[in-house]
Image 1: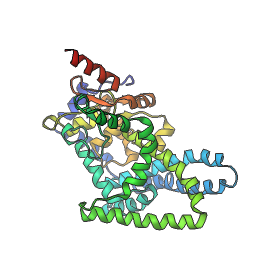
Image 2: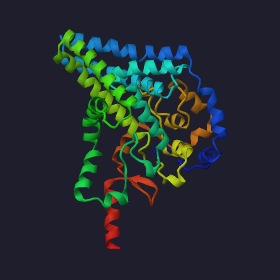
Image 3: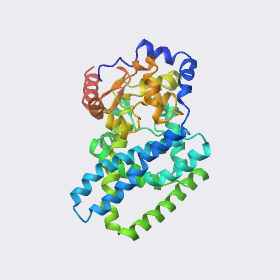
Image 4: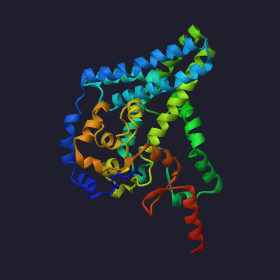
Length: 351
């Protein structure tokens, strides 16, 4: 990690052990959405994404290299649009619960996500993040070293394949954005089924209309690079927010919501342009501590409360290097690489 204070600093522990009274009171003023600021967010995310998408279609007649070049900022604005969708799922973007839901459903069509089901699954993530006994609810699958070493070779191979960067950031966006959200089990709650099926029908109509207007080939040539780039960036952001060396995992009996937020959620300190496109989601410690704070208030909440400056801080390079970490070492209380886990297994065998 960068030179910031360690996750287990006295100040950080002080917040998490204060019963929540201090940080709830401290963060309440920031959990107030401002209509004008929210509209500005839409104007600097959704509108540029739609405009640049049209420009990409027009550029097809000029050069596909030009299309790919334009796809980079277009993908950035799609990531930023997803942050607005994410804020709506927490009811933090607009003052009205109904307005958040309606806007969330509309934005869900742009990011290919059924709003109601995504909101439910993401709430589970917030409620269980860092809990070893409740893994798998909207988080990146993470095994402990002991669990990994006891797997048969096929199980190890499957886990290694899943955690391979080429799979996670190459195939991952297709599964996470395009395929996965289209599927719903028959045992799902009726509301979740309606969310998925309704979104699928609306997307089929929207995509069908666009294919009719511009042709299916041109549609794919424009949408594919944008979705892949945005999806890869989004998965990486979600990954490094909780998957860093000194992160927090604890069994249910010792798990704490505040500890999970302050010690298991990073402050990903990105260059300003990347912070803009990622909608301040790098200030993940504040977000997990109080999900009702809209994205545009996260930086101010962090800056104006020095006690939050003691949380784990990652630079862009730290975030890129964190991809090599694969397993939770319960003895050393940190994430480790496969090589480190292999050494531990060999040492245990010798013992």
